[in-house]
Length: 250
Ligand SMILES: [Zn+2]
Image (spheres, rainbow, N blue to C red):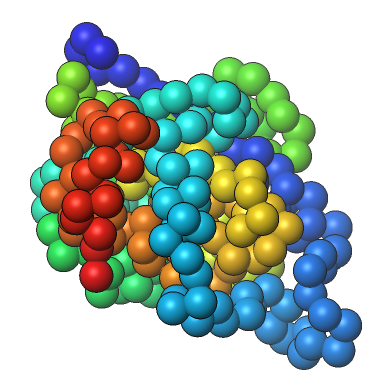
């Protein structure tokens, strides 16, 4: 890669998310679950997940771009700390509270890079915009898309800045707001892909392809690998596998 490369992260997961949230469908939720907590994922004991499953998840969301699982991308992440996050557009207290809780959750897991919300000049800017504005920014229009993320990465695979665009309507339902923020923020932190496997779109278990209210063991693992394990920037999928076999994060 030469110079700055803008990476557009297509948001198929958000499309699924949007369809589900906006239509009120509750896939994968057992009937009888309290409606006030429609998308709380079932807790998965971390120890019940095999190393192979963890690897498959990390690989899917790190080395393949969203919307194209056959694509390959190098390992990219932020290296500065804190990464500052700015909110713009039509925001309210609920938006701020949701973002702050996500930042707190990430900061508990990540040891090297912390996130911090600031008022101006953020490294990562979250724009709340109308649907038309969002589609115009993206330059092409999947009608159901709720949000998308764009990162700028230099030749060392370091993320230097990022923008997230979210439709104003995600604020209309609390869990849509939270899920969309977690999902797009994950893309902006270096997880460009979606999980197409059994842990993904049908399981309510991942940041990368499902609405959720907390980080799952899969996501916690992925953050630890990317931000705590010392895995080299620009690693290919093959190189990452070799590295992880020797440096499995605890
Ligand atoms: Zn996505």
